[in-house]
Image (tube, rainbow, N blue to C red; front, top):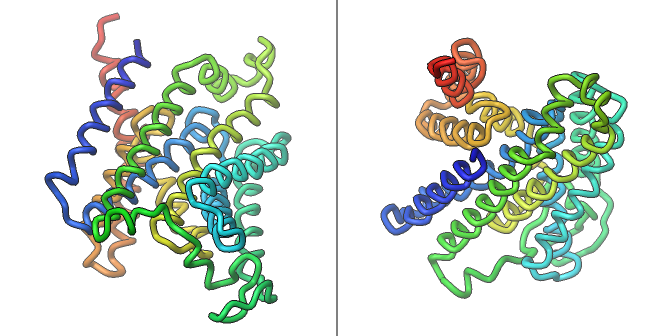
Length: 326
């Protein structure tokens, strides 16, 4: 019943968003909505690890960057079509995430956070300190991982040739389609037997393991499964903006996305998307305030943590549960 309800909600949202370009065709708005789809995919998958699995991993932006860089390198070095590079990059992200999951198996709580953050920083330093020439194109020395300048001109989905100046609308619908697939995947995991196993290990690991739920197997599963769409989101980000660089590892972006999950409701199906919508809208509203913009976002996050510790959707669900007759 819950799965059917969530799928109907998802279908309604897809139809609503599909109509947006017809009524609001401004390029800036459509591009921001496409970015919302990308961040929505990331937070939905991060919520599987953090909110459902109870694993405090901070490696999500590193996995996002792996997907983006893999796509850029496939296109730049092998002239691979982006339609093929994107799924291959997602699979490469799954492989990296599985290795991270193996490294975290013996750790819990803040130690997982420290290790996954260290992995992200190691990848960042590996890229920015890569200064040796790997190729020598007309634009100058090109390190293997792009160095501090990153990659550009590695290919696109061909929408610029097909649709001309309206190529960004085609990208919008690709982003919407990827978000819809990621949402269906997230609902299937959370509402299915695997989601119950993740929640059991999160809430009472001793009892869950005594009943035969393998922490080793399910922790690897949640790391690997969530990584596919995270890598795909990074891949689409690189293709959409036609560039990728070390800013993909930005700590500020990581904290911004983590705040979306907290504000929307950790462990809920639609909370991360709601949090992404609220924080992106707040960020956009404060764009003209300069340095006060970050302070304002910090105050908003602090207010939600104090007043609605379960997030908007989590607090709403708790309130409705209290209203139901016993």
